Image (cartoon, rainbow, N blue to C red; front, top):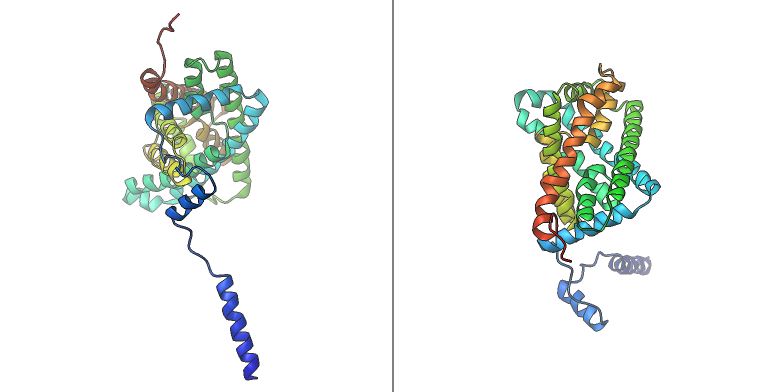
Length: 307
């Protein structure tokens, strides 16, 4: 019996050693291993310098512009679903805090912004989706640098916008059918408020919103690590939600969901009172407020080509 106990004790000891979590190799060890194998020991920079960051954005825009209408549309559907998932979470968490909203409205806005849309954009950026609002900056840069044509820009914007709309509608329908929002009034209240804005107000909110969204996309494109991309996305996206600004693709989810849940809004109201002015504002925010300053500084926007 004693011998059997000693045998099992030894077996357990060796097994625990075999399955123990070993500490990761240090940076010095990884560098030495790379040098011994003939590899490049220099790690990529965590953040690209501004001129390189701009050129990377131009290259990304050119790649997006070169895709077929079908490809852009399908990836647009995916991105519409991603952004809709983010808006869905925002309504579920931040939209379900009525007591906090009454006693501390600033805190409720932070909660609404922090939990939801940032993760939707992260999914889109990491998976290579086509988001109309981001494309207003990237593809515009490619066109102004001569890497794409205006026809390519129109194709990309139209295909991504339609795809985003289809994906958002799909998620709105599924969210409605899931009944996870219960009897909460958030979806109806948000949709009603968004379709009650004057045209000019919705337009300006669209500008400010996509200024932040495209800065998130722009900064994330210059980060080499996942944590860097997440940080670059989280702050601007949570900020635009907390500020009460308007994102056309997110609204493609929230307004139809509000209509399904009983909001007294017509399809015409959705377009004329929100999506049209917000979309126009998003274009100005992405193309002019974000990319134009970088294009005229690090690129060749509005500069005459030497013959």
